[in-house]
Amino acid sequence: MSAAAEGGLRIATWNIEQSWALFRLDGSPRGPAGASARDGVTVGQQSEAIARVLHHMDADAVLLVEAPDIGRRHDGVAAMTRFARDHALRCRAVLAGYRSHTRQEIMLLYDPDRLQARHDPGGAPGEAPRFDGTDEAGTEWSKPPLEVTVQGQGRVLRLIGVHAKSKWAGTAEGAQARGRAARDKQRAQFRWLRRRVDESLARGDSLIVLGDLNDDPALDAEERAAGGSAADIVIGSGATRLHDPCAEKARGGPPPATAYWMEDGHRTGRLLDYILVSPDLAREEPLWHILGGEGAEVDAALRAASDHLPVLLQLPKA
Image (cartoon, rainbow, N blue to C red):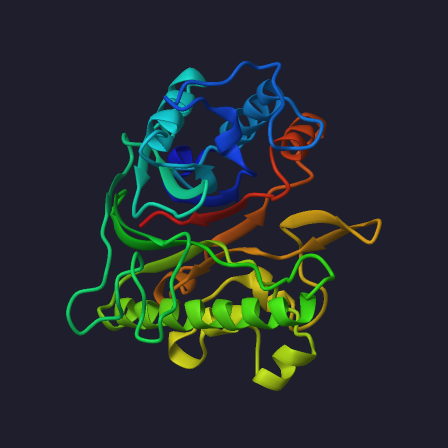
């Protein structure tokens, strides 16, 4: 049943792997027979798979990670707007914030019949700096978080969409030094992000932090020594702790996975994607769902579309 039929609100986050490769510079779709950025998947196959999954989710708003890039020659908003129109998506309005320094943007797709959304960045005097610059320590975001105010269905929500730097080093050569630098930068980014979270909670906002944090809750030796994972910095503690039951399951055992890749010849899965909600929203007892096991057709579309699975949040009627 759709969120509209239930009278609630359904919000999702999904990393759609390297979607820039599906579009020409002007935002029009590339030929369907061409190769996408996903190994062994054509442009047409990935495009149809993305649309199939979005229709199945039937969300009121979807935070897209790795959305097509925006630049002097590229118009990722036009690309996603056309994609939504061509595939008759309910979420057909597209919102972007500060431009990324990469080929991957963060965008919000939403249903304009149910919601209004506007880019609403923080960074006023006395607040943590804007995410398109640097903080006091010189930390920067290559993909600045997207801050949005969403109104509709009896709610006013503040969303912060995130695509964080990976803490993993990649290739073996120089991996230890690179890995330490990556971890340090990720933790610095998350301290900055947590400052914004605290500012929002202090105002009494109903807050949702969602996206690809590129960090799983499981602690390795360095994180145990540091007192927690980078994701724990964003989640926080005590009365201002953000809530996602998938992350909390990791404390008692292996967490569910939202991203998969091959590592040493084996398929590895980790929880990298989250929908973290403020305490007031958590008290409403919303439902979380990592998409998967939806039937052969949808599961095949999930595999063709991305190396990440969508995460859905169902808020009850306000």
